[in-house]
Image (cartoon, rainbow, N blue to C red; front, side, top):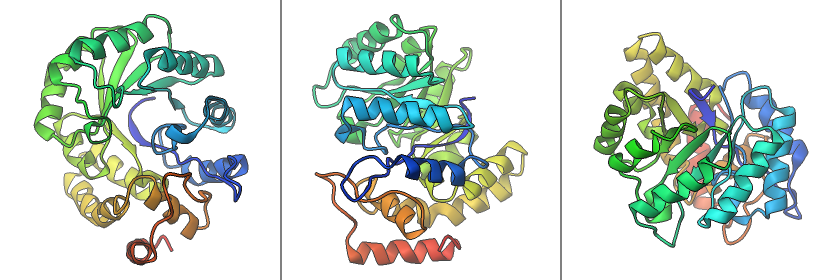
Length: 289
C-alpha cells in the first residue's frame, strides 16, 4: 500500500481560511482512480499553520472518505508533539504516519535516531521518515537510515535531499530489509525508480495524477522509453510547481483547474500574476486547462 503515486494533498481553505472539507472531497474524487495512497496534513498540506485540532480533523476526514490508503503527516520539531500527533492519527485509523525530521533545532544524528526510536516504540502504526534538508536544515544520512530501518515499524523514507548518490546508498544499505524508498522530488521520480525506489510522494500528482500514474505504470511494465518520455513531458510541470515556495504554485494550479485549494495561509501569499501566467502556459500545454 506504500508504493506508487502518492500525492501530498493540499489543504483547501475557504475565503475565511477555515478548512474546506467539501473541497477535500472534490479533490479526492479527482485523484483516487489514479493514485495508490494519499498524504493529508503533510508540509504540502500546510501543516505548519494548521492547529493540532485542524490537523487531526483533516486526517480523520480524509480517512473517512478516502478509497485509498492514508499516510498521515504527523511530524514536529518537538518529539513530544510528534508523538502526540502520531498517536492521534493512529487512533483515527491512518494506515501509516509520515514524520518530517525535526526542523530548526538541528539535532545531531544520535538525536535524530532517538527521536524516531522514542516515537516508534510508543505506536504500532508504520512510520515513514521524511528527509528534506532544504526545509529542515538537517539531513538523514545513509548510515542513520540503515539504523532506522532496523526498527520494526519504521518501514520507509520519503527522500527529498535531491542527492541521487545518497539515495542510491540508502537503497543499497536497506536492500535486505523490508524498507521502501520513495522519491520526495517529482523530478527525481524516474531516476529513483531506476535505482530501486518504489514510488513518489508527489506535489505534481495533485494536478496531473493520470500522467504521473502513466509514467509509473510504464516503468513497472518495463517500458522505460515510454516512462522516460513521460518524465520529460512532465518536467515543465515539475519545474513550475516550484517557481515559488510549495504549496503556493500547486494551490494556484488547482484553483485554475476548478478544483479546491483557496489561498495559502500567512505567512505564505498567493502566486504573483507574472508567475501565474507561466503556470497557465504549462497547464495548457498538458491539456489541464
